[in-house]
Image 1 (cartoon, rainbow, N blue to C red):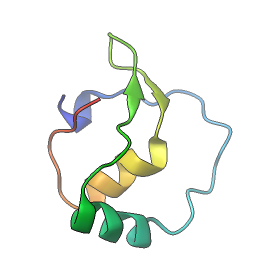
Image 2: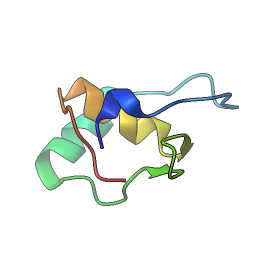
Image 3: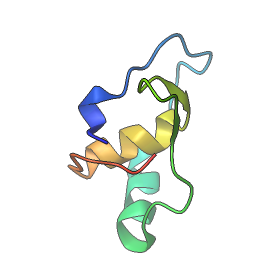
Image 4: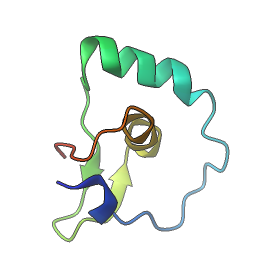
Length: 63
């Protein structure tokens, strides 16, 4: 799924923390736990992982 097609609605967590460390980990070992989206592309879980993948320059992600 194209990362730009994932819709992020209201989220309780405002501060995503240190995404650089998470992005480094994903870059080294891969995305071990995929983000969760509805069939229509609305994000359910994994906003930090999604943003870390954006930092890595990924265009697509497997939900």
